[in-house]
Image (cartoon, rainbow, N blue to C red; front, side):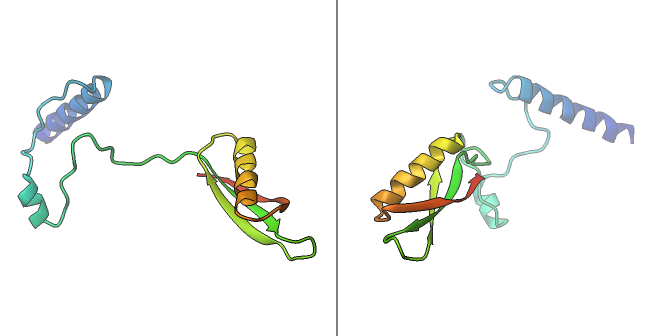
Length: 113
């Protein structure tokens, strides 16, 4: 029990050190598997330098647009990389006009990505 506790404390200390000093990595307690062994187990080896998650920023803007005055509204969606809602809305309106929708009725929804 004390061996497990000390091993746990050491692993936590290594993780904290790795977090505080990302350039210096301590040696792992378990041996690493090679790429061939990882493929045999069904997993993919992680490439060096790639992050585990891809962070998305921006907004998804939905506009009610029309091509003619007496036409029913259709939904136009635009993904913007801007963090500003107003700038994302302006980009969406510009994209809708370029797509052939000269009349923009109103903003249906703006969602953060």
